[in-house]
Image (spheres, rainbow, N blue to C red):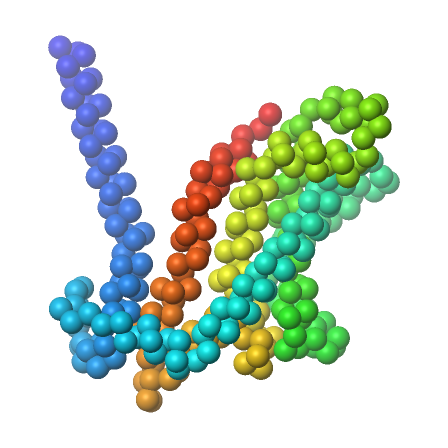
Length: 283
């Protein structure tokens, strides 16, 4: 009798859990549905809706055409791709070498310097943006890809994350490699990075997403269309609505821009999950 009650209670708890997870999933996915729905509504139909409708009987692809003809969205795509790839590559080089130095090398003031690095995480991002803007302006790097890229080539959090992963690798491997005459760089690239590959891939993908979705800094540092990113393009489309915001065309642009990130996640989802799980364990 007790087992039957326990079994019924377990099934009820499981059903309740799945129901709550389903509701949570719908809440998370609803903005994506609304974005896709709005992108296939005509500008006139969208403007005529005093009460938003959760479906449309006359879907159209006109907004996707407008997204690429109203502004040079294809060129903005190219700029964003260049910005993302270069920034991510430079940041991975910087944080990998920094994490290795803090995790494996012994030098005077290492712990004090790392504590100072961690203290930088306490500074509000708004203050950092102001400082970066003044620095880039004084260096006359506004409206350049260099000015866009430089402030994003390092991350204290990612250095800390990689350092923690590197420190989980047994010291005996490092000492054995040094006995065999292996250089620090060779040990880093042949031993440490392959072992920590899930975390490295996760950091890389998170940085790609961060760069691809970058909005405030590109809007602040560039006013030349030749250096606009997709975030600038979305704002241009939004403002081109004949006196009103062209939300459907803007949503169509957002859908197009979101596709590469969704594909990237689907391709590397297993490595992302492995990296997150590895980051949550110690030893």
